[in-house]
Length: 362
Image (cartoon, rainbow, N blue to C red; front, side, top):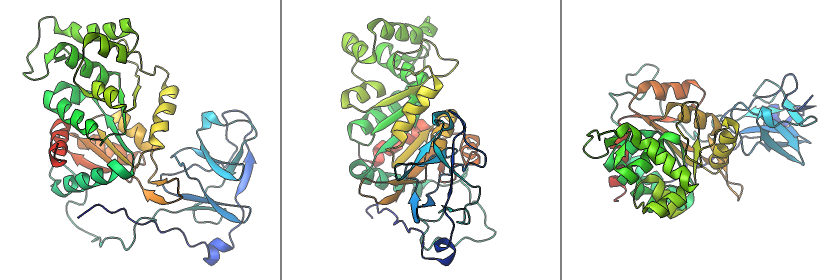
């Protein structure tokens, strides 16, 4: 069956408790980067605030940020972006009694029958993911033309020839609108295109090359010599790989740096907060997020991604969030950090992406 979005059921603000709810408290921020006492921290769910007699939604919500009322609209700000005097919404309840309403079940509809006691309700290495794959194929076909598909990638893909090729086909076919990764994914992917290795190991045969431990450093150094990835690709005649295909197809990618990075490559954000802002600019557009084999990036993006998106025409739709990893720990860790809407698939991500490409007919 063709994919259909779940309808969003908005809160009933004619309910007596919400109709009679008080106005939300607006308190000026005491100084730059500091919220007032009793500030309200946002969740992943749609949230509404009663201001001037109307319930206003925080449209670009982000967990662990604060709502600010400005020019008739509720804006969402990280603490570090607060300015002295910003009108921060305060209150710690979520049921309307403080003029704050968290709408956690807007996409539930009738819901599914849940038994109080049942085996295998959580996804684990023993779970069958056949239906999940089928849903992903249909979801991606829908989102290619009607949404924004954001992929969050660890370096595992760069170590396998078939995985690099599969994801390149996914990009070329229009199933990737943005990519978030780190220095390692881009470095080893470019190393694979430049020298045929990842960390000195052949990406097809897995054999180590003599002095291969220099290969990723040589790749970084060469890119830095040319000053940019695009100039490196042009000068060295690079014609394959994930980063090459992103450049060729105009798919934006954000590379967030880490303490242990080599080099790094020129486009890598060395300042963690600049990286966070650049990543959030992409997350703001995302309607489907698929995180693969990167615990820290997955948790970071999970914390940035609300369960919903408000489209330009005002429609509220669900955001689909998948976490794919060979380790159950990573998937559970993501849920533990508050990303309750994420769906986990426990599998080798290289096999996963090859299967997704095949399922899309690529």
